[in-house]
Amino acid sequence: MRFHIGQRAQLSQEQLKVIARYRHAVFVEALGWCLPCRDGLEQDEFDRESTVYVFAEDEARRITAFARLLPTTRPYPLAEVFPELLGGKVPPSSGDTWELSRFCATGADIAGCTGWSDTASSPLTVALLQHALGAAEFYGAQRLITVSPIGIESLLRKAGFHSERFSGPVRYGAKRLVVCDISVPRNRPLSAPDAASAAGAVDPWNVPPPANAGRNTLEIRV
Image 1 (cartoon, rainbow, N blue to C red):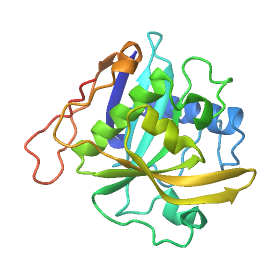
Image 2: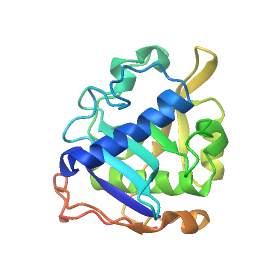
Image 3: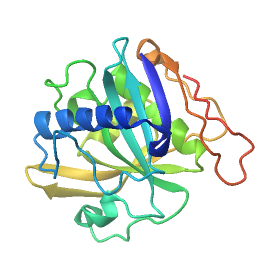
């Protein structure tokens, strides 16, 4: 298993198509989300050139996990599309707060994906979140906010992540959702001992460092 981390602008058109097809297979075909898509590709207005992608590939170069990171200083889904999930709170807008969205870790069995609840503590999910947190730390984030089904907070804490409820629960369709606030570890190597077999290698693109950073490449250690 190999993880990739980089901005959308750094990916080839073929890579972007593969990612969009994977997202369509997961969120539209498997989970039944009603999203505007064309030609079996799932992408939206928040997939900008600077959007950060974190994804894993298996030995056959098939995507098995994906996450998207967006700074809250620019439009992002929670604030623009789902503000009702904030329960009346002001949407975060800060350089130290990023949104984690389109998070999924399916492995090779995309058709069997049922969402966060059944995969939150799986080794692949833990590894994906560790890599997402490492990428967020690189860009100066101190916390990630993400929409999750109720009960995920306890699963995240059991997996070793510090998560609190930012807002919710709010009923959305047939589910009760909360906005989780996940702390980003600072100034220390990330570790995921329970995910060692899933973590594999990291193959980062050369990405521009955030302000005041002395690094010019992204290194994630798991």
